[in-house]
Every structure is written in structure tokens, then in C-alpha cells.
Image (cartoon, rainbow, N blue to C red; front, top):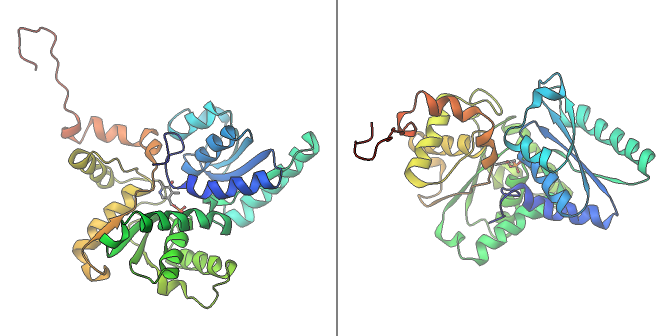
Length: 313
Ligand SMILES: *Cc1c(COP(=O)(O)O)cnc(C)c1O
């Protein structure tokens, strides 16, 4: 339970990253992500809660400020007065985004004399890592983990995967960890986790031994949805009242269900914990609308009932 507008997994990492920012006396914070990034929205909200100014570098194909609209996470960014900078995509972090973050920090310093804290994509570095180490600890102390054999989660920038699998390793590897990728590929995530292991002094541990990175369910690409994925999301909400999002948890849960029937041996047991990492505002970016109005009759369950003495039609 991470509250309304901060909802999701990024706030776990931000707890540690913002502590570091405040420790360093920064008055501004700058991060990067896709236009509908949950991470960027969580940074915007948390920054305002703590009295810092949020700066977001957002990659999108938009060619003018008016193109980015006002939907989903963008609405919340606007309501927090986040300073948004539109960057063409694709824009790799190290070569394209990090240099812009550094340049922006220089400009802010020149103009205001104030320092800017730079947060990498997804908040997935060694400070952010502790967010998901502490999630694992909560699952353990609340007695949740003992009821499960496997834990399944989404991989977007790899911080959730790194935190959970390193915590699981450090506490005796009782569970098997499976990260379902929604962008990049398995090599990218194994490398990210390996680098994190090295950053925290565990270079002798092999990332491939502590986590199973599952590919094949990215679908049409990062943040692009197929109708079958959107229908799956609606099936889940109709059956359970649980809302998955189209970019992250929807794809991972869809992949998990397929993998459970095509490749059950991949899992250690049949008690599987799917970790819901948030993302609800992604449902409001317009992608769901076409499906809800046309192809999916269960959600088009609306009848007119103007006169009380007649039946609805
Ligand atoms: C960012 C995000 C993820 C992926 O987590 P990482 O730690 O970046 O791999 C999963 N689900 C949601 C809803 C997210 O916003």
C-alpha cells in the first residue's frame, strides 16, 4: 500500500533516492523516462511533497509541446507543475539522456545557484536497490513468503528484479525469482543485475544463478499493446477486481499465464506470488478505450432506462 498518486514500485526506490538527494542539499531533481512513465510521475509527486522542483526528460515522438496531451501520468505531471523536456525516441540512457541531465543540472546551477539530483532511468541504481530489498524484508516479516515457491515480477529497468533476487539470495534463496521483460532483452537485465551485484560488493555471485529472466512476452514492443493483451487485462479485472496496466503488469501477467501452461517446469512449485508493481495511471492514456468500446462486449454493458415503468433496453 503506497498511497494514491505515488502508487506503484517506483516510490520504493524513491524513498532511498530522495533521502540521498536531501542529504546532498539538492533543491531540484531530474529523471528520465517514456512519456507515460510511472517513474517520472512518482518523481514529480514525491518531489513536490518534499519541496523539491521536478524536471522530467520524457522521450516520445511528439514534435511540439501541445502533442503530449493531458492523459494518464502526463495529467499528474502537469498538476504537479513538473518541468517537462521532450526528447526524441529512441534515446538510450547513457549516450543520450544522461548527458542531457548533466547539462540541465549545469544550467539550473548557473541560473539559481542550486543543485540538482540526477536519478537514472527507473531509479534502478544501487541506492534504489534498497527499495526492493526492503520490500522483500516486509514480505518475509509479514509471513507472506513462506506460502510461496516462486515470485514473478515485471522487468522494465531492472531495479525490482535486482532488489528481489539479491534479497532472496542473501536470505538463502527459498524462492525462485522470475522477471518477465517488457523491453530490452534477457542479456540487458542479466548485465544490469550483475553490475548491481558488483556495486554492492557481491561480484562472486552470478546473476543467472539468482534470477530467471523470461523473454517472449514483450509483444509488439515497449508500451505498445496488442488487443489480446488488453482483453486479458479486462478478463482479469472482471474476474478479480484487480487492475493490471498495459505497459508492465499486464504483459508480465499475460506472459506468466502462458508460461504456466506451456512450460510449467520453469517454476519451482505451484504456489506463485505475482508481485503487482502498480501502473494504474497507464490505464488512462487512451489505449484501453478503443477495446472497451468495440470488441469487448462484457465491458460494453450499458443499457438505457429512461422510464421507470418500462424495462431497460
Ligand atoms: C517501472 C515499472 C515496472 C518495472 O520495474 P523495474 O524496477 O523498472 O524493472 C513494473 N511495473 C510498473 C507498473 C512500473 O512502473
